[in-house]
Length: 97
Image (cartoon, rainbow, N blue to C red; front, side):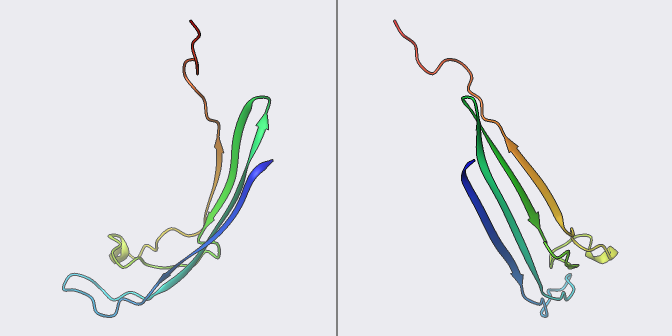
């Protein structure tokens, strides 16, 4: 394993308390996102692996501009995704004469 990484990020959104004519007020929210990954080599092939989690603590929230907020549907809760990237090359890298 090489080129390993770990990342943490946040989404901090304040309260929408001055809505426009066709908007509604919305509470603020705070989300934590994280992920980690690494590259592995199998023969001559490099493979990248990773796992990412958005909204780690499964916070319920409405996005200010959500089109489904009026129906009472919250935005997406915890989302876990996996990555496996296998790059490949088409054709030969060099030609000899």
